Amino acid sequence: MARKKMLWQLYPSYLVIIILAIIALAWYAVWSQKKFYLEQTTRNLDVRAQILEKQIAELVRVENYRAVDSLCKEVGSKINTRFTVILPDGTVVGDTEEDPARMENHRTRPEISEALKGTSGLSTRFSNTLQMKLMYRAIPLLWDGRQLGVIRTSIPITFIDDALSDVRTKMALGGLVIALIASLTCLIISRRITRPLQHLKHGAERFSKGYLNRKLLVPDTEEIGGLAEAMNEMAAQLNQRINTITRQRTEQEAILLSMAEGVLAVDRDERIININKTAAEFFNVDPEEITQRILHEVIRNTALQQLVARIFEEKEMVEATIILVGEAQRFLQATGSILRDAAGEAIGAVVVLNDVTRIRELENLRRDFVANVSHELRTPITSIQGFVETLQDGALENPEDAERFLKIIAKHADRLNSIIEDLLSLSRIEQAPEITFTSGRLIDIVNSAVEDCETAARTKNITLKTVGDELLKFKFNHTLIEQALVNLLNNAIKFSKEKDTVIISFEKDSREVRLSVEDHGPGIPEKHQPRIFERFYRVDKARSRELGGTGLGLAIVKHIALAHGGRISLKSTVGEGSTFTLHIPFK
Ligand code: ADP
Image (tube, rainbow, N blue to C red; front, top):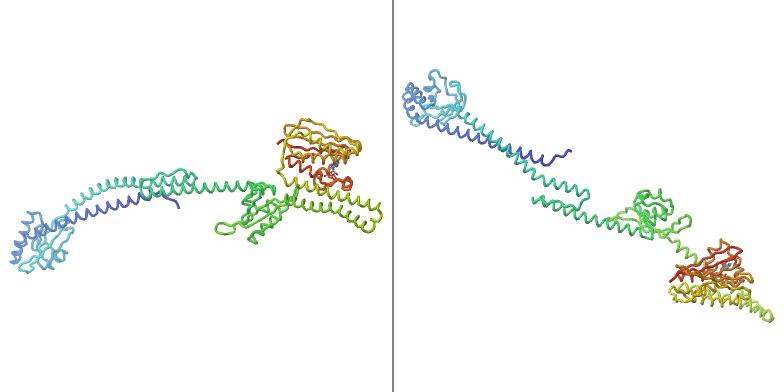
């Protein structure tokens, strides 16, 4: 429906009311004026009749009709009034204007028939005799309580019409002027009423466009002023709420964004309503691109789809493991629950994804480690048990065999001891991150380690050569670095050929100290290099054991480097040799 301006609804109504009021007033004024004139004229006619009443009554009583007629004519012409005298049978016996003999019976004239009944009669009509509008007043003609006839007085009343038409013209002119002034006033008043409303309308439009800070002017009209204040208050509250919601949303988004867990929310139609950065990275998708799209169309992971379906089915918390296949397999621990609105109505589902790949790897490592330790310990124990049984079974009786077996038992016991020693030192390094660092010259530690390994080197005629700045000083844990160096030296000696040279070198740059052990042994094939620092990992198990290795040496070296905030690196070429380097950053 087309809407009209309020001004054009108010203004015409005002105008109509005013015009109607003016018309009613004018009509009433004319009507009361006319009434006044008529009453005045009636009274006038009564008075005139009363002047002649007595004389005429006497003349009629004696039936001197001629005298009656001349009286009528004489007095009537003098006071400009028409007198007519009528007998009870309607016969006219005297008239100012006419010869009564020529006048018809007047009994049926309304005013006459009224007066004949004994009351005064009144009538206004066009007179055929005088050819003008007349007012007729008839009163009973009485003598001693007996009605002798009727005296009728009449005068032209065109003067009333003239007077009234003059009043009408003046009223019309006056009314027009008043109507004009009133309509102008109405227009001004209507505008005054609608203008503040117009302002409010513009203000409300501004609010709807989001400019909630711009307040409305408060007009001094109580109702409209109150409305403007209420609207300002509403806008302020709205502004505050929008700010709160925006802040909460930003906070929420920041939380979601920075969460290590992936979060994914879908609505009832499985349309994605929110996905955080972590979750998007898990599934390798762009969050902006897939929001509002159907889950299974954009993330092709059956386990995830089944989980979401289960959430909607079971309506309670559900868990599942999601495996991501890619370059490296990843395991996600997914927990899903139903999303409800304030009324408790289910509106979607939310899934929280935890990357448990590392935990799984650690678990596997721990499991492997336990299995490895058991295996490593079982081998010497089984041998010891075997030889003890052989001794019990009679080998003791042959002293040569007995001594040989006991030597083997002792060797295995030593091996058990070394494994346990190594395991203990490994766990000590791992469990004590708060190791102490003291400043000292590296050459002292190198010399001490070389001394420890000299016997082993001498048995294979191996030369241990040291290259490095003797004054190089830094903060480190002396015992641990010496142990790492001994382990590396032992390996280098073990794997070197007779008469080889093992070079121990150290240097520093602006960031770190590097301590290397270089040998010219068999080297380590590339495929084994990444795993060489794992516990119990060996390139050739049998050979390592034969050489007295526990498989823990390099793991210990790696952990010593980590405890110093550093690392270990390896450069090795099969057939040429290996160089192990400890990198220790300055403290
Ligand atoms: P192990 O006690 O068996 O020597 P490590 O942890 O010290 O245990 O070494 C692991 C494996 O790495 C060894 O079994 C060996 O196969 C290889 N390895 C270590 N050092 C050298 C080296 N200098 N030259 C060749 N292979 C080496």
